[in-house]
Image (cartoon, rainbow, N blue to C red; front, side, top):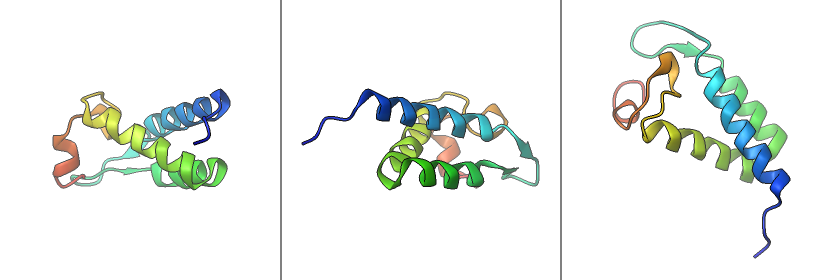
Length: 86
């Protein structure tokens, strides 16, 4: 198995940070706010490729599930993934 390069891991971490930041730029509409995050996710996947883009998205969701306030409106926790916004 090929070892990932430090550059690839850094790009993945920066992409997860970009996803965290773009989740906060939102328009509140009902229970689930509209964010620019889908655009950022498509951009991350296009720039990093499917493998590293998927890993960046998994890191973002894992950070939110652990309770860090990375989801829209600075919310976090596993309950956010189960409710109407999940």
